[in-house]
Length: 356
Image (tube, rainbow, N blue to C red; front, top):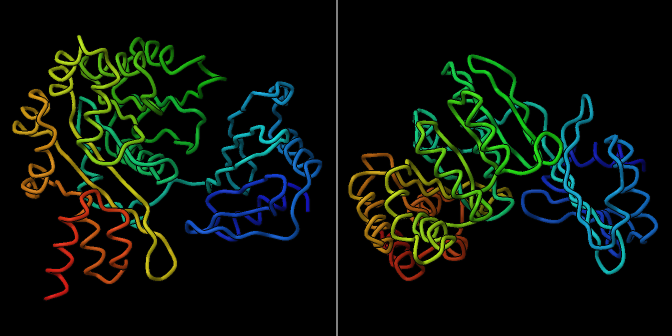
């Protein structure tokens, strides 16, 4: 098959990812499970397929000439969809993993994104973090939030992504999308530039290092609404990760700064359902005076109790969200215990549900 036909096949079978790796059949990831197609690929076949991807995307394959280089980029095929490609070297051969992104913006209701998550789009300033493991839908949730703002507010939205996944068209807002590598050399330079471009909303693809985190927190202090991501699960882990990026001598000041700018932490996971699909599960923490105080005083171990007590403010814990899916019959007990953050406490909740 030609590479265009393989990509169309990925779209047709509902794949989220496509793997081109020597010694493995072409593999699609559908609802978190692998579907392997045909015979094992040889190194020559994987290289030919990857070079065809470069040709199709009209991108120079210069990165392939360096034995230790990876290449990350996105491209679109008219009437098909967008694809985010990562090309890498492994065991002396070329390999690629492609994320499949369908045209159009996702529907939060169809994806099971709850109202308390979408309500975060109504914030006007401060820092909102969407966290979770890689490949668990953070970019999709952010796309839904940006789309909601685009339809509800007259704002200038600036996104910085590596690479761009979802394309936002101008609606009530002006949407400027910058791809790291082609439109700006780094997140830091793009973020510093954005502060001179009259932004109302900034989407920073990832707070991946100390310098980016510093500039992001400074931007959130200047009155913009800033969205970003971290590869953490749970609000307490997220707060600790941000603070731990800084030297010990600065951590006290960072906690004070974070308590003032943080508006919400949304953590999410994709879990397997009983019907063979996947469901998104969320933890939502909103910044209340009590939570600000816990962040300031390094009492993140108390955040879970504060989130549980904050249901009226639109908060929920990851473990409670899992238990609700279990009570609805959508996931199994084993799935709850595999993905929960507090095993023993969740086990007791499940036992109580079983006795009802």
